[in-house]
Image (cartoon, rainbow, N blue to C red; front, top):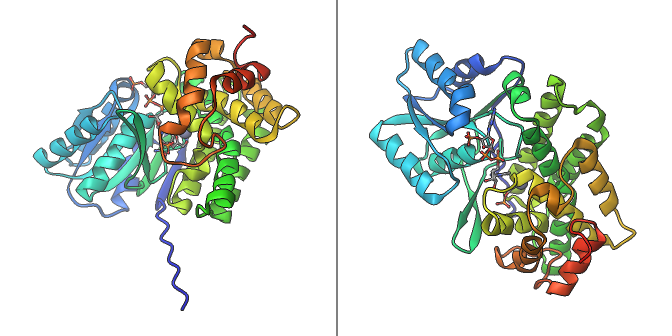
Length: 355
Ligand SMILES: NC(=O)C1=CN([C@@H]2O[C@H](COP(=O)(O)OP(=O)(O)OC[C@H]3O[C@@H](n4cnc5c(N)ncnc54)[C@H](OP(=O)(O)O)[C@@H]3O)[C@@H](O)[C@H]2O)C=CC1
Ligand SMILES: O=C(CO)COP(=O)(O)O
Ligand SMILES: [Zn+2]
């Protein structure tokens, strides 16, 4: 008997464009959600978009509540859940970068409530994904979460955000190259389930971004458009896979370790970009494609070295040698790198200087 089942959860409304923020209420009205919204946002995102979203809800006869979060943590998810219950919210709206969006989608999952994603920066590919990424102790969890029913990405707001956030989003997409390589390796060596469709979509998204790199320039609103579309596409790949595998391999494990070793120093996207240079070198060797990844990142203005990340060489080596421990996810790191091998790859790729 044929007994395979797949369940792909995708957004119904994806609205991307100049000045579309006020269309959030319309995009939500079409979803026939009951009750009032709880807006989950972060300090800057609240100023640039969250307050306007709240005002629009009020103008449309709703009674929104707001919760401001600063870290991606299970405590923050719990706080949002408690607020949603206390305020008797009907659905959640995440407004901001990757952290408030992750928290809102995880709280929505626990509450069994609809979730709407309003990104204020093109800095990460969690805009659409049905996953949440949260540190806890020595681990970094990739948690099943409520995928958004609607996404509203205002390119006017996103283009106005600091440019480094957009280059971080580009790097998060470019890292798909190595994430897919790791996924294929895990499939071959560990029989991890692999989706050809999700893998191909993730890889194609990275290729299209690199091919269109010429139209990704600071001060050009079209850049926000190109990058948001790629981030949505990458999130769809994760939704098809039912895991973050298409967009998160060893380069992400390395970045998650840097978050623990050097917290708050560099953006997620920038860290995974540098991680991707390193892990591509591990996959294909000195003459391999790692220089293409480095050059694509450099061309977009994203960091390619420890110094550009603002992270010292010792932290890079520590992250490389311990990244395999953070999650039970098979990658090119295998059972781990020793210090001399880590120093060799980091030096050969120019990520750290020669001692
Ligand atoms: N679930 C998934 O599939 C994925 C999850 N992630 C997760 O997302 C997070 C990374 O996302 P990232 O967006 O970098 O993190 P943040 O949400 O922390 O945003 C980064 C910074 O950008 C600021 N910011 C956001 N929008 C604007 C704006 N319009 N103007 C000025 N500043 C702005 C934030 O300020 P402030 O905080 O003050 O508002 C914050 O300082 C990580 O936790 C990562 O693990 C990443 C990829 C995929
Ligand atoms: O950042 C991600 C994809 O870009 C996903 O994060 P995880 O590594 O926590 O699954
Ligand atoms: Zn990422």
